[in-house]
Image (cartoon, rainbow, N blue to C red):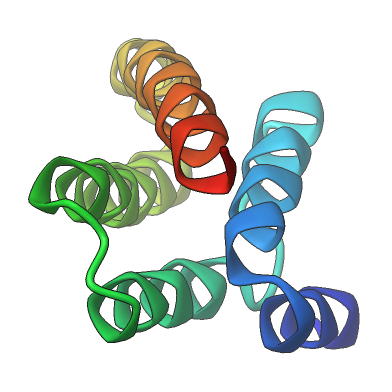
Length: 102
């Protein structure tokens, strides 16, 4: 948990990618990952980021919550579907984060 919290305080945009990479690689929700997403949403609001960037992170937060629920219920079809959703949103996030950094 500490590594995600530390990353979020230093760079919330990079912390989102780190949390999502961990979810994809380990097929589990690491402690602190949802908090990282919430911090990133707050950060995006503070810096006045475009609405579409905030919507992607909000979508990631919702999808991660649903994935956690599906993992707890051992609903494999839902887990597979939500992992695909997270991959798509992750790609959209990386594209948007790259535009923000430019």
